Structure formats: C-alpha cells, structure tokens
Length: 248
Image (cartoon, rainbow, N blue to C red; front, side, top):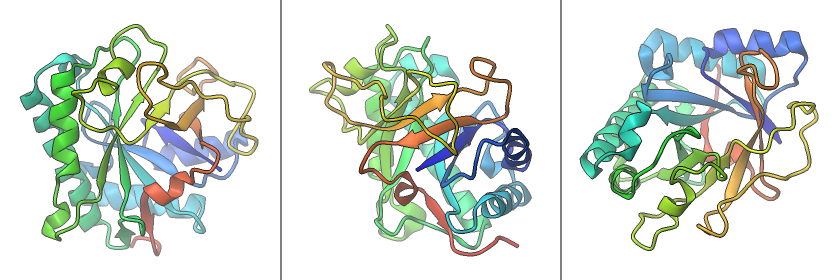
C-alpha cells in the first residue's frame, strides 16, 4: 500500500515515475497553498489537469492527499501566523474541491491535512495551536461538516522542536505523523519496505501513519517523486480526497 508525494506537477511526475519503473500508486500527496512550489489549486485548469493525471495513474485508486509548506520561518511564529496559514490552506482545498467536479471528501469523513516541517525548521507551540485548531474547527464549504484533521510531516529525530511540540500537554491534538526517516533507497512503490518508520516517542504518542521511505530530491535518486507507504493496518487512501470519475 504505497504512493507518491511530489513538489512537481503530477502531469510531469507520473510519466517520470513510469519511466523509472517505480510502480503504480495507490495515492498521491500534493501541495496546496500556502506553498512555495506549484500548488494543485493554482487554477481550475491546473487542478483538473493534475487530477486527470492522478486518475490516469490508477483509476481504481484515484486518491489525493493535501500537504502545505508555508515559508518555513513562519513555523516558529505566532498563533496568528498559524491560523492565517491554516485559513489559506483550507480555502485552497475548498477551491480545488469546487473546481474539480468529481473530487469527493473521504467516505469516513477524515481528511488528513499535512503540515510540512522540514528537518532544519523549528515548530512553535503557538503556531501549531493556531494552525491545528483552525483546521479542526473548519466548516468545509459551509456544509456543516468538519472533515479536516491536522497532521504533521517531520523528521522525528531532528533536533529542532517537532515531536516535543505536538507532545506538549498544551498542544492542540495532532492526529498523525508522516515521517521522513529512515530512508530505504533500494525500495520503490512496487516493492515497499517492511514498516520501520521513525516515531515521536518518547516526546509524543502521536502515531506515525505514513513513511516517506525513498527521497527523489537527489538523496536516493534524481526523480520527480518521493515514495511513501502507510503503517500496518492504516489505509492511507481512506484519508485522502477521492475522484469518482475522470475530471473533464
């Protein structure tokens, strides 16, 4: 049960993954604003093109999970900065949801929303609480539903505060960790490694649910995709947007 995340457009990343023979994904994880890459929600045509390629890559499991990468210095900032970034993120997800007609929320009502904290970045308690509390209390598209679940992508072993922040007794609840370590560069989506992701213990009991085991930014290879797998018993696609037909 493995898939891809990418800072590139899926329209470029999927042909690249195919050419490298990495395997067919069960999910894609892609960036939404605020993000210093090209986000899915850049335009309606962009969002539909990306989602068509997700459908092409695997029409039996056309899943899209949302990530946000704010300017990393903001993550050590205030509650107001966290709330502002979460507001932009939530709005970006609604925009894509409305632009891509066949895009649906997860059937279980749990859309895991990932804050990208890179290894050299510090995460303040104030920022996390502002970010996570806004998402958790967000009425999606004014529909009376609250499907956004705040989660954290990080390197659990990195020295800047990450696990200790979400593990604080004063921290707003974090539903899951997505770990960037350790790497298994010899494994791919078609042959993911046995589960060995780092976790946040002893600083936090938040479970690691997703593991980025292969890095395509030049550490493992020079491809356009990073490769990920879910924890045993955790089916990552169930916590992503779902496409019920090919976007037009």
